[in-house]
Image (cartoon, rainbow over all chains, first blue to last red; front, side, top):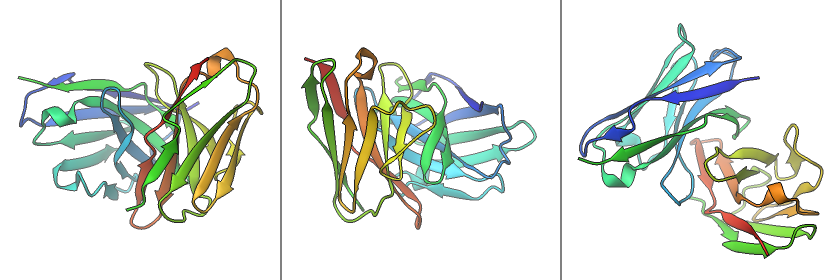
Length: 117
Length: 109
């Protein structure tokens, strides 16, 4: 059973950079799936942020592309998200997930990130 | 960009009754459509993919239908654990993009 676990700071200052890591267990990050980040502002819907393949190939949501970097570390079976120039609008629960055939079949529990000084 | 619109925003149904949730795409998405269930404080759970195929472990009371622009999620006999928010999701292969609907909250009547 694949499991994903997000980790990182819960508070980021305005204009700062968010750094989150997703640890994958129960399977290899090189298994042939894409690995993604999705976020959800409090009380709102879901927004896809971007994805990465174990080769390092990435795809990003155009609305966030200028601020997002996703990377992978095969040696630790983890992938990471960096989101720069954070504002209050970026306050959200951030989820990592595994993509399978265009859909997201395994999810982390999510981590709340608040942007505040 | 394709827009996914779900209706209604809130649906009140009694346990044991049938619930029908709708998702409309602004242009045809073929059958590239999934449904997720999300309970408070939890991550979304994949219910249906390919518009009509149940994901592993999903009870048979959940069914999906539709293609093109109109999709439906039906829960045949609501159980207490089914009251949650439901999202539809579409994907484009190129450029890769994943769009969620705004959600339908299914509440106990």
